[in-house]
Image (cartoon, rainbow, N blue to C red; front, side):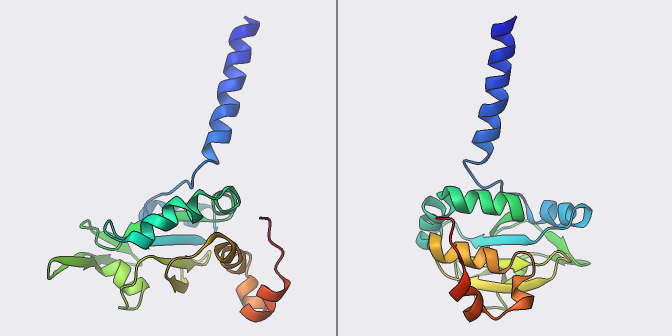
Length: 172
């Protein structure tokens, strides 16, 4: 009996540790719904399947333990394919895939990026589900840690980026 309990406890601990081995990505709709019930900022990673820098960010930045823990604790993280073919309803509007040339784009991704389709892009929404900022391009771990902290807990409201960056203490 003790062995069974010990194995069960070990399994639960392993699952809890494993959960912090990766970012707990969700859909855009899931994040919006969760944020409505339990307000938290939303981080949206906008990528495409063909984007080399998106893949690099997945293999480096989003694998960093400090980044993983920070995102999973403070944000509802979303992976949004900039060329997704399914409809997404947000703020009473249904965003669709728009075919264009060989590829195409999703209207929601284009709206978040204000028409400047640049991958990867990382968008930050506040607890009221309003877009604060889109940050285009690959973000290495140390820079991304600062950006994550800046858009969390209303830091962006209280001080300019230059001051925040100067005083930031990294956990890495």
